[in-house]
Image (cartoon, rainbow, N blue to C red):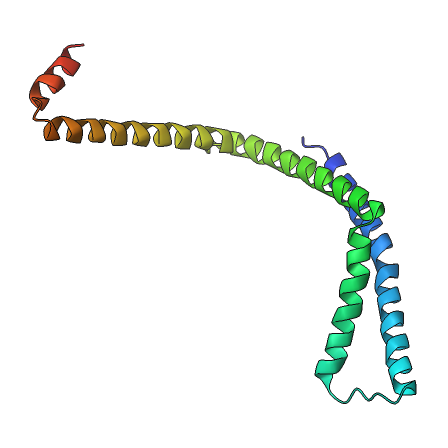
Length: 151
C-alpha cells in the first residue's frame, strides 16, 4: 500500500505557507486602508476604480516582493517543492501498482516503448538520409541493400 506520509507532509507545509501568508494579506489590506485615508486627508480624491486598483496593485506588488525575497519564503517554497515531488512519486508508484494489478501498461513500460520508438524513428531517418546521399552520388543502392541483407 502507498504511504500517506508524503501527502500529510504536503498538507502540513501548505498549512505553514498559509500561516505565513494570511497575516501578509491582512498587512496588505491595512496598508491599503492607511494609504487611502492618507490621500483623503491630503485632499486627493480616488474617484474611480482604476486609481484604487493601481494603488492596491502597487501595495500588493511591493509587499509580496518583499516576502518573496525573504528566507522564510525561500525555505517554505523549498520544503513545499520537495514535499510535492515526494507526493508525486508516491502517486506514480501507486498508479504503477494499480496498472499492474489490472494488466494495463505501466508508465515505466510506456516510457520504455516511447524511448524505443523514438530511437527507431531516428534510425529510420538516418537510413533515409544515407539512401538519399547514395542516390545523389550515383551509388548502387541495390548493392548496398543486398550487402546489408547478407550480413
